[in-house]
Image 1: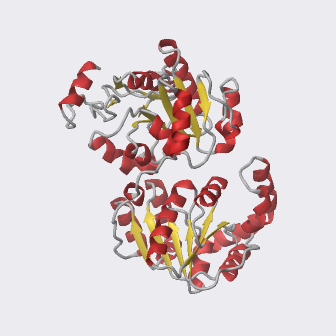
Image 2 (image 1 turned 60 degrees about the vertical axis):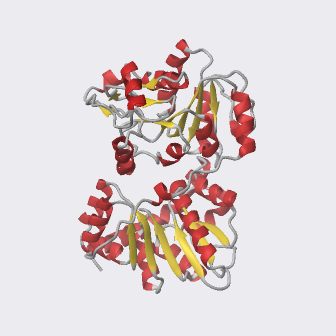
Image 3 (image 1 turned 90 degrees about the vertical axis):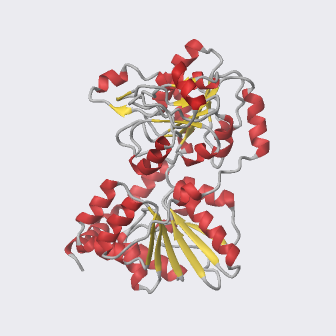
Length: 443
């Protein structure tokens, strides 16, 4: 065993003594399910199903969606399979419960501590383990490999920083990545880097998130919310994190100066933040509480499984996780497939390839650049709000300008047809057609 792996195991064993305190704190903050804490320690009340069991491990909501899509495809081919999905967040657990697929059990992933991992593997005895994207825990992976469980890494995709970190592990990184019998990367960058670490060629068949069908909005929920919104101009701030809601709210205040009836829907990445966001927005109504929208300027969509409804009703969507340097972006594919024009901040490291493809084909909205002068960015946070207003009126979106960034020049998206003009920074004409060029000319 390499020195790095030995050190990691020693550290997880030592820190594991404080796991209970840490988990209790997470329960108090709403990040853990107190009734299911035993699962974090590898203790389960549900028995293992009979027959062949395929285990999927996913981090949070995005990876869980990929896992569930793979489960559906595998179940359709072989009705004798049962499935286990382990995840790390309450939101992903709620998503799995809402989908309620047949022959699928959900558990919280065990802590990456030797005893917890061993109990997990002894209880479930998976016939195959499939890790999704980048949620790689060394103790769990190596223990599964040692137990004889074949392992696969599906839709592998990592940021340059994560890939560099695995490479810096040397022999330890090679041991963990090499434990997978099969790896399929979502992009060429990840394939090349993981191949160099594992010492073998890795294919990059494509990103499963891009290949996944558009979410199907619940027709009844969509029509009911559409009736509440009426003819008001509306835009969506999707998958926001703490610190981003304030930016969207300030932008919306500027928007309301021009369009007093405009509506902003905030859908936080973690619904448990709903109450805190509502307090920021003068006790805005919360969807999770069944509170009516009325004529309020802000609506908090703190629910799960409804992004399809929200994207379908919003001509413009600001994709959160992109406005602060501590974040790495979220998936823009869902809003694109539901015909919502996309706005984004500059911090999209986790989805750089997807955003690059969108912009290359004229499909991206207002994307901001990092600013050397943070104060200059602070002074002009309202561009994305004006963009959403213009979009609703069938005009153009100009550059988003959240805190700490400056707007790019040029029109970024025409929301009448909800396609991007693509004239970002350089002012070069769009290749998306004459209609879009006329839109940019109007900007």
